[in-house]
Structure formats: structure tokens, C-alpha cells
Length: 321
Image (spheres, rainbow, N blue to C red):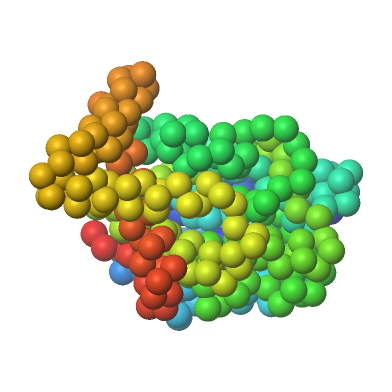
């Protein structure tokens, strides 16, 4: 059996860490699990220590800076094996995710492989966020959100890697806080390697469960997407420009209305009528609020990031209690 090193960056994941670790240890794989421990303010460190004591495959890697990219690079540098599998602490891979993933890497010759982010929720609000994640009305048409045919991909969710390609491109860019997976995938493709998507691979993802957390997350993600778009405009998908265009259209509508032209409100009525209709079809009452929060927070953040850059912008939605 192929040996793999699973890497897991962790910060304030007291309530999800045990389930995430168990979903990894239950996989049909031989290897190790490296947990990069950021400076959590909850009981994450205690949970991690208990888990490591119970299973010798678990190694704890201190990550004082707390940044995801730094933590993953630390784990990669200490990993023992050629195949690297990234799993986040708020996600749970389906059975045989790792073993089947390694098989697909061999079958396709890919150096980076990703599957489907199968968002799920427990509360009504979280279920509504999960619905939006898996809908083209929410996050657009990326295969790792909505599924699709296996094939060459723009990017990969989490990722199963050959260690050699990570070393070739220099690992994760530690100056990037959000969008690091997209940036890494672009550098891997630019090196002549293949990035592949397989709908066979499913990972359960638990999204934000509060409105404020969702707003902070999508604003931060939008800021970093705007920054990355400015850095690498040519490789940016057109779908990334839809939310900022919506924000500008709504702002223009207000301006037109302020000059005494009621037609300016038609943009607002059209957009909010659309999200209400989608919420009705989804049969989940919070969906209109969730969609508007995702679109507008992300779109406004994109404009800020494109104009001013993303330096200093952190997503603290999993930190603040």
C-alpha cells in the first residue's frame, strides 16, 4: 500500500477536529497525519494532544504564525512520504478518498488532484449556506462546488499531491492568506504539470454557521481574489467578475435614483427579487440572505482587493467567538 502524509492546518477547531481526524484515520491508507497547530484560543490544542496520544500516526507540528499556508509548508517540510494529502479540520473525506485518490493520480499522470466539496449543514442557517455552496446561484460553476465530468481543472479543492511537484514550485506562497489553492494550482500548471478534477472524490465541508462569520469569510475571500486577479489577470476566470459587477450595478442604481430617476431602483428590485425566488425554490428561508451576503461581501471585497491589495486582510470568522 502506498504511504502518504496527510497534512491538516488547524486554528480554533475544537468542535470539528476530532471528527475530521477520525475521518482521516478511518481511511484505507498507510502513513501519517501531521496537524499544524496554530495559536488557538479555544480547546483545540487539548483535543489535538489527546488525539495524538491515542494514535501514533498523528504528529503535532507547531505553527506559531497561525497562517494556513505557513502551517502546510511546515507539514510538507516534515512529511516522510512522496504523496501529500491536504485535509482541513472542518472537512471530512469520504471512505477510500485517499486510496482512490492515489489510484487516480497514477491513472491520469496528474500531479495535483481534487474532488467535490460536498457542503453540509446542521442548523437551518448552515444548511442554507451549504445549499448556496453547491448551487450555481451561490458560488458559480466551479466543478469542485457543483460537480461535473472528470478532467483537467482550473484548481483543486484541498488537494492530493505528488511531493515532487510541491518541491518544484516551492510549496504554498506564504504571502497569500486566501486563494492559496488557486495560486498553487496555477504555478503547478505553469510548470508543465497536470491538475485534475475527479467527481469520484467527495469531501464533506462544514461551512460557516453564522451570518457574521459568513460575511467576514466572503469579504476576506473577495479581497484576496481581487488581489490575485490583479497579479495574474490573464488566468482569471470571467465568473470572478460577476459579483463586483453586481456591486457596481447596485451602486449605480442608487446614484441614478438619487438624481430623481426611479428606474435606478430596478436593479435592486431585480436582484433581490431573484434571490427571493431562488430561496423559495430552495425551500430554505435563509437562502436569500445567504446569497446576498455571499455575493455582496465577496464583490465589495474584490473591488477593495483589486484597488488596494490584500495585505493585512485576515479572515477571522473562525477565530472570533
